[in-house]
Length: 226
Image (cartoon, rainbow, N blue to C red; front, side, top):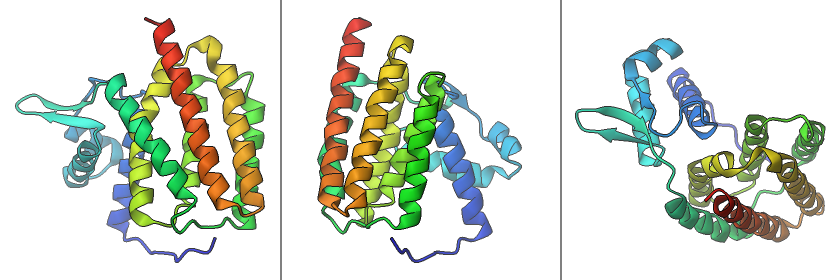
């Protein structure tokens, strides 16, 4: 999976660091729905001026994770299950395309990293927290995005993942965490099996099937919670 290395400027690295950190905090619930985000406080936290923070917030707003309210400030968006369920359906359609539109075949180093992630998930299964589950899922998903060779497809798939990932952490009951780890471990194993033989279409359809099952389980959790 040879990729051309692109050198980033210090300002690009700084932007990516701030962007990825805030996005992760939103998706893991560190910044819950409705939480206010203040440019000055974030600039102080990251030891930067307010300009790069403002650019990051603008991008996060365009991706639907935050919203600006005139005269009030910037806030993390609420979780609308019905609206995000539609985004999940779109993710399912795109997942199958990931294995068909110029997919990148993984090299040995990539497969080794995914095998390491699988071992980590198996070790975390019984004692892991919901946040730890979210972090491991985020790592796996971002690895899968690296295999998408089509640029627009990769960007949209990643954006939709982070937009919908909060649903899983919000709706999964504590007593369902271990079964969720079982489903997640099964997905990694099946993806690895396809990648080891270079079957990229199968990789896409496996991802789609597991997304479909994720949505079905979330709907059940939502019904149980009223």
